[in-house]
Length: 426
Image 1 (tube, rainbow, N blue to C red):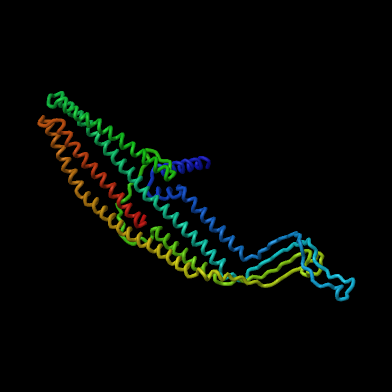
Image 2: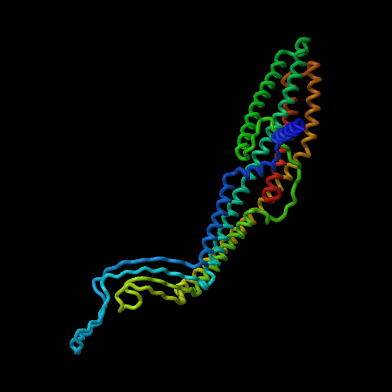
């Protein structure tokens, strides 16, 4: 049982290691999103929205306020009657003392606020949607950069492999021509011409490897993957999407959220036009109390219903509504511009795809002809009718034709995935 458990762990670890050495472009999309620092802001924005909504909900709870005061007045209210003048001797009208004290506890309970709290919560939620969708737009743009990096690696891989095959072919040619030199069929200069191209191939290999390492380093930072030079990058299928609408683009959701935000501003503006009703109770203890003629400490309370109505909101109502309408029109104009530019982009992407498809129709035939010329050149140098330089020209022409096909394939894949990016059709 213990042995079986150890074997299962080793199998799992082996499977994990294999998974880490094989990467698809879809893996890169998802990991780049998870690893991008902006994704953390998405969670922070949602928490901020929740906190703000909770705080607004507390507006429905009774509001308590405690206050106290101690004052000294230079004068107090007195009744201006001379009692002795009217024959009332020894009678004194009480008056307030100049030092006064008070402690109060006020309780207010909203009955109806004209929808102010509800509209404020809707404004918070709509603002959150705008910010969330804006972050989604920025996160989505990372996919375009992943396309450039990933297909750059695929191109470097293909170039390294083709260059490896060229070096093998050149080495074989060198050995063959070397035998011709020994037999007096070819000259040392013919051998030197091949040697030059072997050195060039080694030089190109260094360039291709450097480019691939650079792309791998960038992709590793984007995705957080532990990628090495031997990682297999899966070549996607030539799956051309059908042109359609761009409703799935995050920019469209952003425009919708912006419009909803301004419409919530309408509701918030309207809620400010209504009166607000609330119940209140004030309990206090002080000197004097409610009876101004009792100059002593006493408890008291006041209860009632209160109406607040800010009539001044009507003054700017018309201009505020026009401003909101203007803001909505600006968003709709941005939407139209985005759709217009995206339609042009779609047409351009389709044209580029068609261009590479048409180019690839001729690649195989060009390679076939260049290969035939190269083989004929090999026969001619064996007969001593051409030089090593002529043979290398034929070999290089064949190599360039193969490299062109490789480049066209990767460029076609990149253009397809750029097209998918425009449509958000991954």
